[in-house]
Length: 331
Ligand code: ATP
Image (cartoon, rainbow, N blue to C red):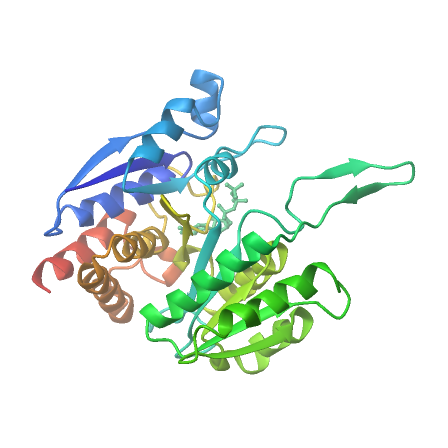
C-alpha cells in the first residue's frame, strides 16, 4: 500500500486529477490517498498558496500527484515552494511522440534531466543603480548529483547516451564546472556514451536531428527552455508530463498550467496528468503497471475516437479517462 498526497489545485487541476484517479482505481496496486490544498482557491480560503499542512503531508507520503494551480502575480508560488521544501532537485521531462497526436516528428523518444534548484534561478537578484543583477549559481554538489541521476536513469531505462548541454565557452567558470563534473561522473558509466553540446547548437539540433538525443542533462534555465522546445516537438501542452524528484520525495505533475480559459468546461485533455501518473508508478518501482497505463493511453490516442477537442475529438475529460480505464483494466 502506497501513501499518496493528492493536490488537485485549481482551474483544470481538479478535472484532470479526477480523471487520473478514476483510472488508478482500476490498478492492482493499493493506494491510500490524502488530499491536500494549494493554489489560488486555497489562498482565498486560508491566506496561503501552500499551507504548512500540505508540505508536511507531502513530505511523509511515498509520492505526490499534483494537478495545476493558478498563481496570481505577486503571490508566492505554491508549487515552487513545495519543490524547494522537498528538495526536488531533478526535473524530468520526457519528449515522446504518440501516434494520433499533433507531433512534428514521428518516433521521438528522449528525456530531459533539468537541474531544478540553482543556476540562474537561484533567486538571488538585486537592483543596481542602472538595472538589476541575477546570480548564476553552479555548485559541484548539485552538478554531481544531477549528472549522476542522468546516468543512473539512462542505465535503468536501457538508454545508450547522455548529452550534457551548457555554454562553457562563454560561462567559463559556472558551466566549465558543470561540464567537467559531467565527464568525471561519465567515467563511472563506461556502458553509456557521453557527449556535450553548447545550448545554442542544441536548440538547433532539436529541430534538425531530434532523434539523435536519448538523455539530456542540463542546468536550470537551459533545461526550462529546451523542455518547452521539446514540448513543441511532440504536440503541445495537454500531452506533456513531468516528474520532480529528490532523494526522499517525488512529485508528479502535468506541464500545463491551470488553463482558466477552459476550466469547468470538462474538455481538458487528461493525457499529461495520466502520463505524470505513469511516471509516478515508475518512480515507485511499479514499472509494469506504469507501462500498462501508458499503453492504455497510447491505444486511446491512436484510435482517436474518444479524445478531447484539442486532439480533434468531442469527448469530455472523463469520457476519455473512462476509455483509458476500460483498456487498462483488460491489459
Ligand atoms: P497558468 O497561468 O496557470 O499557467 P495559462 O492559461 O497561462 O495558465 P496553461 O494553463 O498552460 O497556461 O494553458 C495554455 C493554453 O493551453 C491554454 O489555451 C489552455 O487552454 C491550453 N491547455 C493547457 N492545458 C490543456 C489541457 N490539459 N487540455 C487542453 N488544453 C490545454
